[in-house]
Length: 35
Image (cartoon, rainbow, N blue to C red; front, side):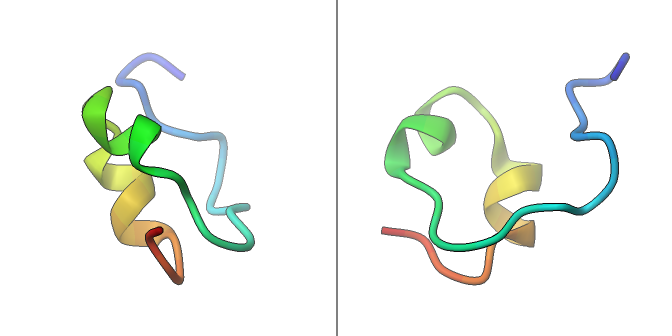
């Protein structure tokens, strides 16, 4: 997507800290659990 947003909210399962380090805070907030 244009603004680094995922296409929809299809995020299942935990999300690793690698995404958090890459400024994917939106994905981290959508994820049910952060490892």
